[in-house]
Amino acid sequence: MRTPAQNAELALLLEVAGTPKPGNVDRHRDLEELRFEHFLAGTVGARDGLELAENGSAIGPAFERAIEGMAAQGGGNTQFGALLLLVPLVRAARNECSQPIVEAVCEETTVADAASFYRAFDHVDVFVDEPPTDMEPLDVRRGSDAIPALEDRGLTLFDVMGHSVPGDDVAREWLTGFERSFTAAERLADADGPLTNRAANVFLTLLADRPDTLIANRRGEAVAQEVTERAGELVERDALETDRDAVEAFADELVERGVNPGTTADITAAGLFIALEHEAITV
Image 1 (tube, rainbow, N blue to C red):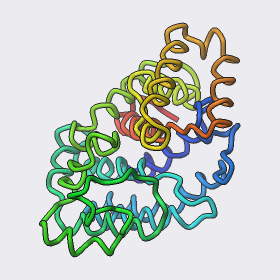
Image 2 (image 1 turned 90 degrees about the vertical axis):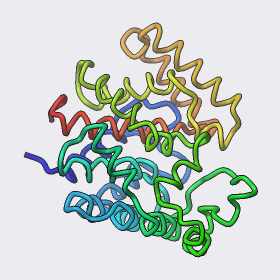
Image 3 (image 1 turned 45 degrees about the vertical axis):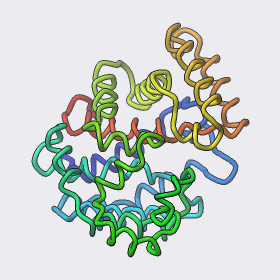
Image 4 (image 1 turned 30 degrees about the horizontal axis):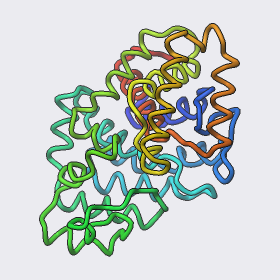
């Protein structure tokens, strides 16, 4: 029987192995400087941090350790957002991987957890949008240099996530009881076929549900909306079953355009973990 940390590792591996996932690295597609093997190495590197969460560590130090290990490969940021979801889920799974428990884990975070979150940005470059003027001293791109301002304001990690919404759907999961992650888990359980195919299918349905915030921040809301509408058209006609070539072409096009729905991939990974923990899917 796998431990929660092992299920989190497996979830990361299944997510990146799923194909086609339009715009994202998968086992058939690399980005210009970010390759499939970087995600495999990032998953292995994150192990110590995931095990810290499983063993009862506070969320912040466990997350920082996971990011430090993840970053020890040549591609840079592979799974920052996914780990920001998985670490509290793994911590919750010590008791029960349920929405009420993970909500409590997130709400009980401290200022020290927030400081560890900021230190995680010292290990890897992460794309984030410009902060509001009043939040400039707390710009996460400042990394550990922003910790004095964070401590002056007494902000917990849960508070920091609150300041990131709207505009970041990984942070939004923290505020909604991981609503979309649990929805993804239900869809994975209801789907048929190999898990890598199910992961690709659920990724596409999530992309069709809601514009990806990473696309919106990098390329603008119009591009994010366009991608969601096109994903919706493919889902509506069950293209992964009836016209897989159309989904493959869409995937190739987004890679060529540099349009990366990374937030949707993060939520897919969280859904895989929840489904594995609930034994709703098996390997």
